[in-house]
Amino acid sequence: MSFTFDNQRPTATVVRSLHPLVIERPRSPVHIHSYGGETPFFEGLGQGRLMATRCDNPACTEAGAAGYLFCPPRVHCPDCLERMTWVDITDGPARTAKVHTHICVLHPGAFNRLPTPSKLISVEMEGVITTLMSHMRVGVPVIGMELEPVFNTSSPTFTILDLSWRQRRAR
Ligand SMILES: [Zn+2]
Image 1 (cartoon, rainbow, N blue to C red):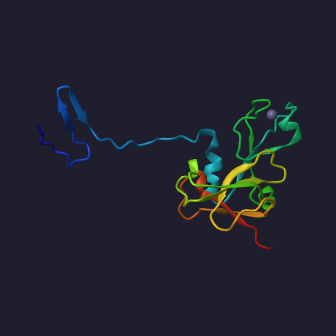
Image 2 (cartoon, helix red, strand yellow):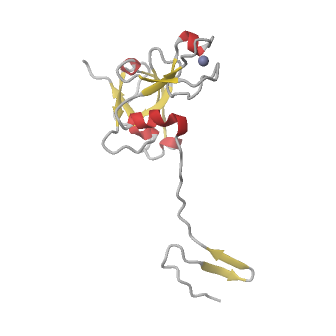
Image 3 (tube, protein in one colour):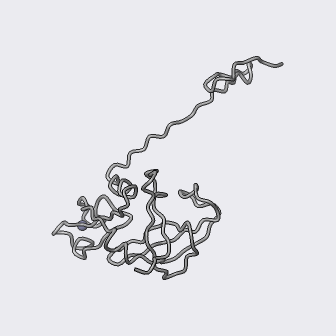
């Protein structure tokens, strides 16, 4: 038995079986994602800025007392839970960036729009207590290699892919 259906339109219903009734109705999902408190980080990448956070709560005895920067940023302090302060580290700690470690992968997860194999790197920066997972589009990473950020400011995607790194050029 065959059926005649209008499946030229993307939302047309296709009957696969009458007994039991099984239909196919194609859908194109639209994903709506709020960045919430992380907005300054992703907005900053598209503007050529690397943003971190710091706990400025004078009563904080851990991260706040030490003045640690977090990048990737935390919206709230992991120690005292107070809202963190945004800090532009583009012209500061980002100028000290180095490859902490690296790996070459065929299935790079959140970076899955990159050409493969992808060169994923963990980036360390002076004064920043966290390492930042990112990638190199050009060059071959080596542990300790000095890096400089490359921002996608021409057509931002507002994803982590708006940031990559390359070997730091002599200044
Ligand atoms: Zn704190």
